[in-house]
Each structure stands twice: as structure tokens, then as C-alpha cells.
Length: 124
Image (cartoon, rainbow, N blue to C red):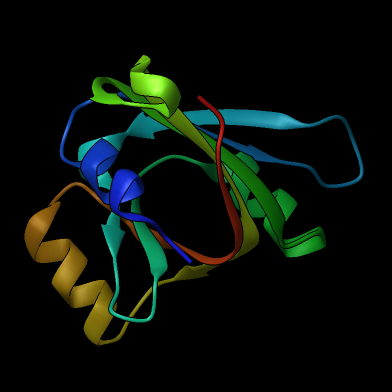
């Protein structure tokens, strides 16, 4: 489901915006492309330090949307820059092998946000 261009975007730094919503209005939190780790089965793992409101929203509604991009990766029609909108379901991981692997890479994390991708659409 995740394309070559998606992986190319991850090789370049850029802002990632994650949208969650519980019973109130949508909430946005940001991270960096370089913090996203894709598992062999294409789940996305993200180190979480704060993200408390996102976690509360995920407890009520596990659906998320995420936008990311890079000016450095050519998009459609050789347009300079491309981006993706990812949709999926989320949960938080607080222990286990994937948590430990992420903790080694990102010592600041307190939890790991795991996103199971249901859709990844290139936008540019």
C-alpha cells in the first residue's frame, strides 16, 4: 500500500501532522518525517512523548488522519515536492519488542503511537 514515493518522503525531513478526534473538535499534533518507522507489514510507529490529547482521542475513536510531505521528492508531472494523506487506526504501545526497539532509537519517548494504515494517497 505504501509506495516508493512515500518511502522517499520519509528519507527527507518535513513536518508530519496527525489529526485525531474524540467527542470534541479535531486535534492536531506534529512530529517529523524522520521519527516515523515503518514495520515490514506497513504499520507506522511514532515515538510519543506528550501527545496526551491524541491518546485520549484514540481511546474514544481510534481513527486518525496524517499528512506528510517533502519538497525534495518529485511529485506528479515532475512537480517539485510531494505529500501524502494517510488514514488508519491508532493505538498506543507501552511495552514489548517494538516499544523497546523504538526506545533505543528515540530515548525521549514514553509510548509509541502505532498506526495501521488503511489508505495512503499521494496528493501532489
